[in-house]
Length: 182
Image (cartoon, rainbow, N blue to C red; front, side):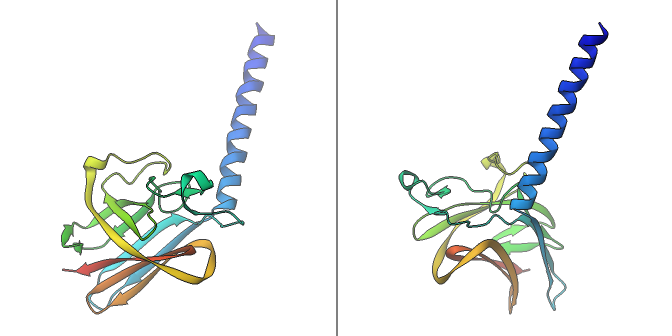
């Protein structure tokens, strides 16, 4: 009986160590980041996400070309956990009011534009798709082709005269999500 218990304990320990190593490895390859901005009007936008790297791969493209993130397929807008947008007060995105709070964000890439969704389902591992019935807003945003490649997925925030722009860049693609103060 003691031998069985010892073997079970060793197996549990090995599984735990393997899980911890894989979690650490993923976090090193796609480190967490936070962006925050407070506008002159008092709106604070905070974004928590993880930053995967290009590492010589095709990022956005057709599935048959082995793109990491194929056109038409859900993307968690980063890596690891779901990307979280947090608004300190009610805002408007694509003419839809988003109440104060935290939200999951995702995208579905396309060759000319990305579908971007903001969803109430935010506290989850990012690879699993959200419940789309919990989307507060979905919108198509045009992409801009960049002349230089961006090695690591980056989200930047900029203040506009009406609110904040969320600027997403990776590989040779940039797209902007406009957020308006109400």
